[in-house]
Length: 153
Image 1 (spheres, one colour):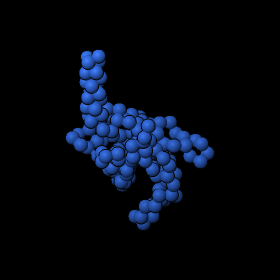
Image 2: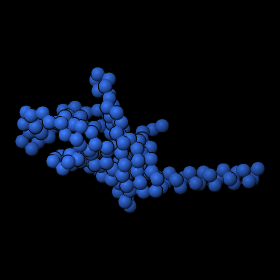
Image 3: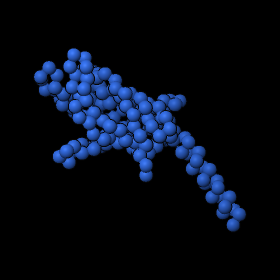
Image 4: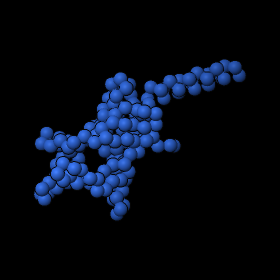
């Protein structure tokens, strides 16, 4: 009986160490701007929806998904794969590229873009910046601050 209790304590200690090593593993929710108007250098969020990160860690490598909640019609895009790396207390991830519809000066454009997130963990929150960029280098959007909260199981 004592051996079983000792083994259970060792397993529990290992689980505690694992969670300390993987502070971002799990699901995180954020409010994601789905439409932004930019006029005279001033940005206004026109609409937003919930988005969720679901991360796993292997060493310093990050993998997972980024999922945008359905819109008012019930339509949701497919989850995007994310990958990245931890460097010290900082994290950098990128989403897989997707085609985005953009209107600039009244002209419609479809541009293949990805989003880069750089952030740190602050308790039950991720805080940092996101930058939307064209994979062909033709356009970078300004960085925006973001915060995501850990989802409770």
